[in-house]
Image (cartoon, rainbow, N blue to C red):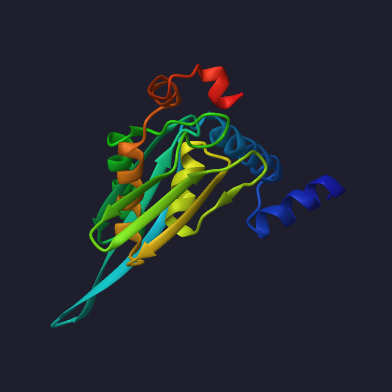
Length: 195
């Protein structure tokens, strides 16, 4: 028996085929390609597990809150429930893609200061100069990153429920004016306003 035949036999015994190492490398390469091809960035904000006690024991179900954005000013959120984690996340991502809204972004920040409310949660968003970064926590950070904002200051006031904070942030976005409207209202040109 030659060296090559011995190695092939050893590989078959250990469960490896001859081209498996190459296949794994190609699979990793394809994963990177899929990441680049993706149009939207998906961020899981909250995953919750609930248990229903039945005769046979506990029956678990999952709910997922997800934020989706294209990093160019479009952002949306979705909420999905299922008996399986991956199915709940998939449902929430689909709902988020159906509910995209425009987030006005100029020079990597928002055009003006705004306060949004939903139930007991309140979110304050302020524009920031370049280099500041996203000064926000949890849900607000996920929304700003997905929307393509690179510099913003924020403060979450009141109830800290992730779902309510997301809704309050989207209340801010829905009432936000774009840079052209603000410049027109102030009687200035866009260049004067943003430099």
